[in-house]
Amino acid sequence: MLAFEDFQPGHFGTFGPRLITREEIIAYAQEYDPQPMHLDDEAAKRSLLGGLAGSGWHLCSLLMRMMYDGYIHRTASLGSPGIDEVRWTAPFRPGDELTLDVEVLSTRVSQSRPDIGIVTSAYTLKNAKGETVLYSTSPLMIKRRAALEAER
Amino acid sequence: MKFFEDIQVGDRRELGSFTFTAESIKTFARQFDPQPFHLDEEAGRKSLFGGLAASGWQVGSVCMRLLVDTGKREAAEMLSRGETPAVWGPSPGFTELRWLKPVLAGDTVTFASEIESRRESGSRPEWGILRARNTGTNQRGELVYSFLATAFVPRRNKAG
Image 1: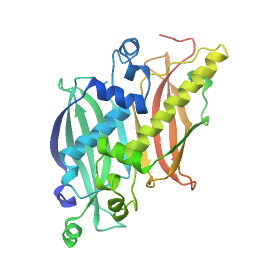
Image 2 (image 1 turned 90 degrees about the vertical axis):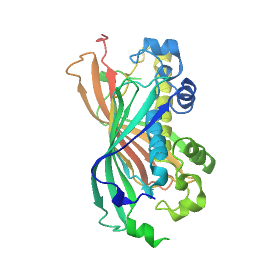
Image 3 (image 1 turned 120 degrees about the vertical axis):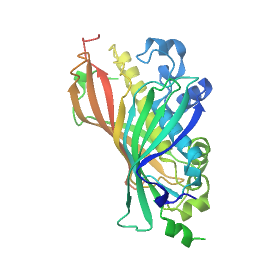
């Protein structure tokens, strides 16, 4: 299990690639973001996105899943209090293969809960052409090593 | 949806409510956020959340759905009055997203959107840029969710 102390400022890792299918873009949009440019090819071509593209909130949810598959599943994560910033910098499309880069920006121990550390990272999702489709910064709460070992 | 000129700072839209059932929490979590406190009641109770908790991204996704539904309803009302609804542009992103309190199984969250600032785009005169504070409040009146969204909104009679 990765603890707070395993996260140090600098490049943490690169995860993926994750292939995005047309079916999952449409399924998410039908449930959470039923706008024409996420559902219908013809409507999407006429939109500013220039073709079928996934919802930005779908991309955020996929970022979460790629984080989980990449390292959160083996991290003593306690969740996140929020997201400082998300930039949707380019459309993501059916057939895209997304890669996640994680850069740790800063780490600190919680003042109110000294058994918890807070790791703030920058997350960049890129497609196979190397275009950034999402950039985000956010804090994650992680148990400290001593607290993790005390549970054993 | 309204045009930029017809929207003022402080305008508030009620977006509606959603009840986060245990089933809906687990279904979303299995797909996007399978951390134990989003999948299992016992793991949730032992976590900082104190119960089976919705993924923050489920809360965000539900808020998006209610924003879209509200926009469609407003567009239909404008059409029925003989007005032309505006087609808003894609959002460049958001800032200051806070999951202020856990959303637990059985909670009902009511969402709202309030305009915080508006300005004309310097580089693209056919667009205005709005920032809206979108919030979610639970059945006890506690603010559980907040973020500052950015939207490009077309200006009247400036269609590029």
